[in-house]
Image (cartoon, rainbow, N blue to C red; front, side, top):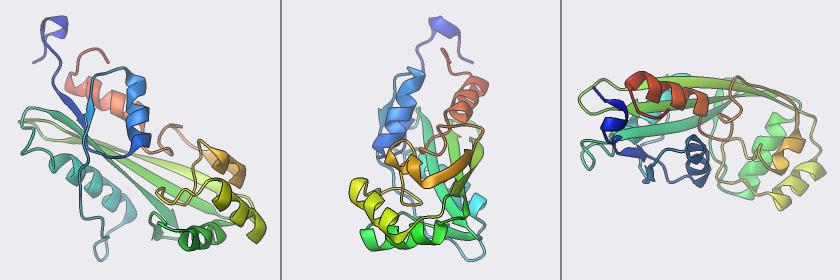
Length: 199
């Protein structure tokens, strides 16, 4: 059991090489280290999108456990879903154009999972679902967006915290940070419930 200010906080790790997630976690004003963690992101046959997101969040955190046996490790992953189909990170302009064209005038759900892997205790997790309603996008507006903000490393091919906000009619969310990549309300809650000091 942690004893408030009398006990040094445990080492906190973010199992991610994403600068977006690191920038978000900095908002909680807790000392942490971000370390890239790999997991097999291949969707398994019959695996639901929410199960995929949670599995990847847990796998990314668990992948650092052997190297950091005493650390509290946060893993996170996001899955974009259109008509039951998972949209991955585009990686290039052609795929980004195809994803944005498919999303035009439609609703896309973004499932953002977070896992807290704890030493000698069962891990905890949470899942946030954000609904993004895209406006009708012309081919020219899609090309313009990709030229201005090539979000090839983002699920769904956009950055809502940047110029990508112009692509939408509305966003329905319980946690505005989830769509950027890390649901801070859930992260703070998981840390509090586990007894992390100062949160």
